[in-house]
Image 1 (cartoon, protein in one colour):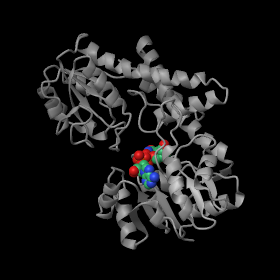
Image 2: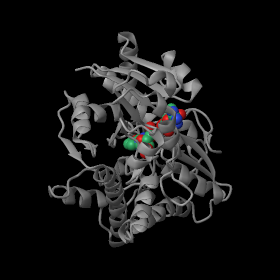
Image 3: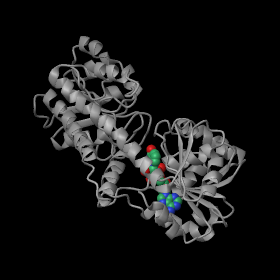
Image 4: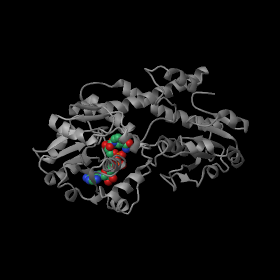
Length: 424
Ligand SMILES: NC(=O)c1ccc[n+]([C@@H]2O[C@H](COP(=O)([O-])OP(=O)(O)OC[C@H]3O[C@@H](n4cnc5c(N)ncnc54)[C@H](O)[C@@H]3O)[C@@H](O)[C@H]2O)c1
């Protein structure tokens, strides 16, 4: 049955949630405080790069089931369900900053219909359901936790084909009403208490970060003992208890979620009296990985990059997104700049200078006169660049492939000194 829904926040999670719920037949109004963003959405422009999102938003607007407005007060009356999809950035002490959540809840509180359900989709620590309840000041309104697990780059697919839907509610009737929104999705719907739902989200992100740090540590061992990490991972992944997913070495993890959520879980544990040493180690290994890749680039040109020209392919934190928040690529480029390197970057999703990093028009011009090329983001298109033209453009033929993306034997045949991660 179609429901009337408001979605507060039109970022990666909110816009995807709104567009997908409208595509499932619901009547959705999306709200943001960013006047410019709402104007762009109303003129048909999609402010983020996300596969399939433009089509869903267009269809939603055409059908009249999806609209965009500024200000929650106008949007919330008459809505049975209100999703909170606002940011929860890292606070000064490492814990999640709940100020956006609290202010959104305070804003909608007086305008909510009787017996509406407020659904928290932002990633929030245990106890946040109470924080929202207090800010709403509405005893008749249930607050439910519904953490989001979508991945940027495949957000629409992930929302419509989730591995699971988690609902955390103290009120069983509210949980059942909410579960009705997802009729049509073929995924297990798990109902639990709010604290468990909130912990599931943090523990899932922390576990994924752990997998990446683990494989990067294994890659370091492979380099030391002369093994090939690609083969090691393949051999490990055949074991069904391990699996192939998320076991690719790289420049380290980043993005808008893993860094802040990992630190937040360490903090949540600490506040509850548990020293999460394992997760601290996972974070340390990641910081080391940024340095290991930076070092490889510096060593590739003989130990001193001062005034040396470096080409970098990749700026976003991963492929198929335009999101650069906490990008490992930017972290490594900045370290190279600090060491004196002159970096020219290229990324298919980034068109202009960003954070003091010069951006070339295409992959080959980024390499002009460069002494080393470092590959930092795993965009597929980098595999198809004409490497002969790259060889011609560069001053010296050296590649540090922090994603193990290129076919090493073919680039070596072109005379490149090629180094990957965890393999010679
Ligand atoms: N990005 C992801 O891949 C992802 C995945 C799962 C969960 N999450 C979580 O979802 C939440 C949102 O993340 P995001 O990446 O979509 O954030 P985002 O920064 O892309 O978008 C947040 C939006 O909320 C708007 N906003 C802030 N305060 C508002 C208010 N009071 N009223 C209306 N709009 C308001 C902002 O203007 C912005 O457009 C975070 O808690 C994040 O940790 C993110």
